[in-house]
Length: 346
Image (cartoon, rainbow, N blue to C red):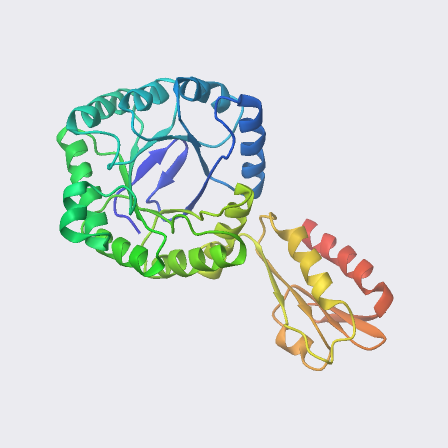
């Protein structure tokens, strides 16, 4: 994790806790729709939200959106230093600029002067679609080109007195992304925004992001993450938390363990596991719930769970700590959910 810390609103990047980000899909100037979507993201556990700024209406709307949400808002800027300045003046908590298309040093100096005045940070976000031309011609679409492109623009900001910086070097190729971030981490102490860009759709996209982001987090690289899915952005937040949990970097959640089932399973273990997972998805409490398929070894495998269930032909066993009880199979789901709610409220 980063040695330096950067404040984005009330969220600290580089402080040890990995911040989860997502990005809205609504037009930012449509304040009502943008706010509604961000509130859903907050409920899912998003720590920082990014909005696209395509024009002056979007930039000016940032203040109105910010007034009605509870997490820091980042303005995503391409092509225009003017829009970056206007977004900062409208209340953005952070800017994201793309070094390959924001312009030269003159434009970056305007951005630097503005964000210093407003005391907000900047993310220098390079990706394989926006590598500086001279690095692209020399190194091609490579990890080296990504890192050099990002760091060149970091140095420009530094020359203009800006030190509140966050860096990202994303690609849609997982090995390339991992290599780029590993190179970058060895050359800077700034906080790193980690993600696999344009990961795609559905399960395949989640797997790509999990492999790339997870590999980096497990090696100590990354301070904030975004899972880029062609989907409802709420799903990005859920996927990000799942990655953090799998990496052991998030503690206050209910872990649901469930077996893959086999021919011995004689109740709807799969359906119950899905319902339980959905119920506890956003619960902020440390705990473990087990939904096991049979009584042959289910209770033994899940003996460290705070609450568990294992199924039989005509009955299920519900266990909590050293206590257990048999219930008819047709009553098992109802009784288990009563026990689950008791546990969650305890």
